[in-house]
Length: 449
Ligand code: AMP
Ligand code: ZN
Ligand code: ZN
Image (cartoon, rainbow, N blue to C red; front, side):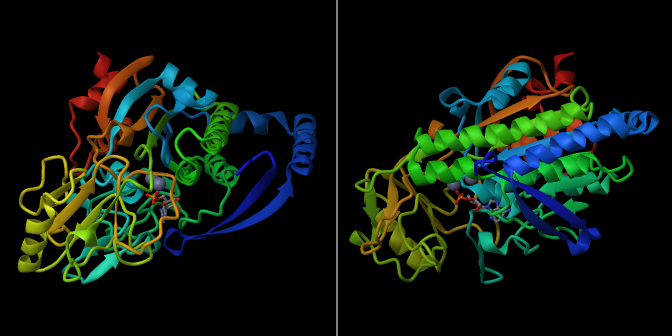
């Protein structure tokens, strides 16, 4: 994770878009790499023919195709840059727009939120209802490991909207971007692989920026999960979380430096988004469902599969009689657990998908878990997935560039607003979405007129 300790260089073999892209990683020690870079800089400064350099500068700095760089940071809680050193993120927040509270969709988990960001659609309209989503008509549970199944991902993500309108898109990881949606993928993309170091992800973005203008993507996304992982393992405000914030901030700084050295800072729009917040858990705050009800007649994707228990949100699917029975017993079972029945979901839930909408939903209070007796608790120390009404679940967003207001603070946006912001920044027609077009004017420089 520490990009200083091991610097890894990635060579990318590009194939045509449908065939994917293969990565090869070569590990070099930081010291060896630094000395090679110095040699290279020296040789270039002495030998590069000047007209060639000038030509490249014109190409790279071409403002007719301003770049939109979307940086997705997993677990970027709304206040995280106030609690840890993050100079690069803080400068974006200060110079551009800072959204104080980015409200996630329910459940406040990774897949639903990154895909809601990409599509501007609530889960009931894009099919990604949780990290594990059951489809009753297909009798299939989609999980994070099936990231390339096109049946998982409905709606139109931003990279497809862009490609359809002639804008080249590149995704250095994003939920849904490894699947062929509506027969399309981004021009450049990678299947998600958590072992790829931050430095290699950054390098890939810079390599894309170095492509000739005719091949260079105008929309680029990149994703970092280190903060989310550290907070889960070690808790909110832990020293491990601090280290992860420092490391991810360094990756953002490297991206900003890369834009600067290519003469692209003034023309580029940078959008940093989190997917949810985080809260500490405590083992004694567990509600054991089997103390109240036998739910074996119903299927819950969260309480089956690998995990079995210690969850912060549980959906149930089954026949009406079994659901009725469970509901009547469980609805007032525990003061720290809310129970919702299909047809009576609150407005903010947005889980009424025709084939995937659950019949019953359990939501423990912030910091509480739902489990079964006999399932040991082995962490995480902190997590997310609770109601979007909980401020602890809110994420951060920072945006800087000509399309955005300067030195502005916007109190609240929803993750579903971001798709429309991106289509406005790229100057393209948005597909159907759930964002609020008035709310996004607070973020855009054009809204300041
Ligand atoms: P969560 O359980 O909600 O905290 O999920 C966070 C995890 O999601 C990260 O640690 C990644 O391993 C995983 N993840 C993020 N993006 C993807 C993706 N596109 N495909 C598969 N897994 C992903
Ligand atoms: Zn996440
Ligand atoms: Zn997480």
